[in-house]
Every structure is written in structure tokens, then in C-alpha cells.
Length: 128
Picture 1 (spheres, rainbow, N blue to C red):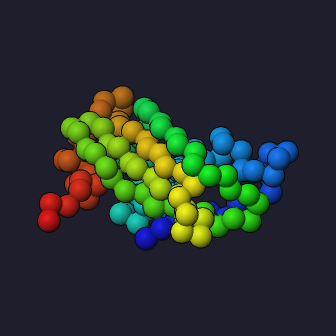
Picture 2: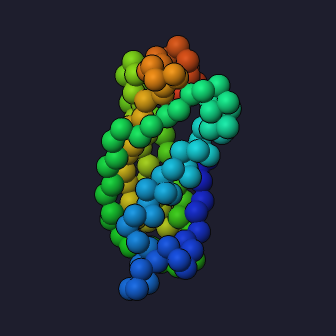
């Protein structure tokens, strides 16, 4: 299920184009939505003392977006290692890709890295 973000006026620069820094926020919104749907909401994780820092970001700006554009954001798990997870993002407006990117995360508790497959098995790609 895609997450939808409608571009706000304040997210645009003087040229009327969505400022590039906002796409990182859009990635976060979509990631939080995905984790909520999987039952790993930030409130739940933080209540358990778990944090999920971003360790790497990649952004590819393909076409500009503007005020009031509805950006459809698909986020999926693209890679999982023992301690890190990579999420891929595709953002579209009216079916046209405007952005692709990825973010790499780990999960820690009390300063120690958690093994993703043990603690968050639903984040692992299904083996059909």
C-alpha cells in the first residue's frame, strides 16, 4: 500500500519546486507508516528502548514536484543483513516516477545492535 504525501506550500523553494531536503522527510513518513502497518511502530519500539538510526541515505531526484502534488510513495525492504536493513523508495506523481532512493538502518537497544531476523522477522523479505 502506498503512502501519500501532498506537497505543502512551505516545502517549496522560491522557484515553486519542492525543496530537495524535504524528500528525506517524505522517506521518513513512508518508513514510519510501513513500520506501523507491520506492527513495529516507533512508539512501541521506543517504549521497549529500541532505536533505529539511519546509517546511510541515497537520493535520486528524477523530476520536480510542486505545491499540492500528491506524491505516492512506495517503500519496500530491498536488503537485509544480520544487523542492517535497506529500504527502497519510489515516489510518483500521476504515475510518473519523480524520485528513487534508499535508506539503511540498524536497530539498537541499550547501545547494542539487534539481530534483525531474530527481533523483527516480519521485516525479512518473504521467500515465495
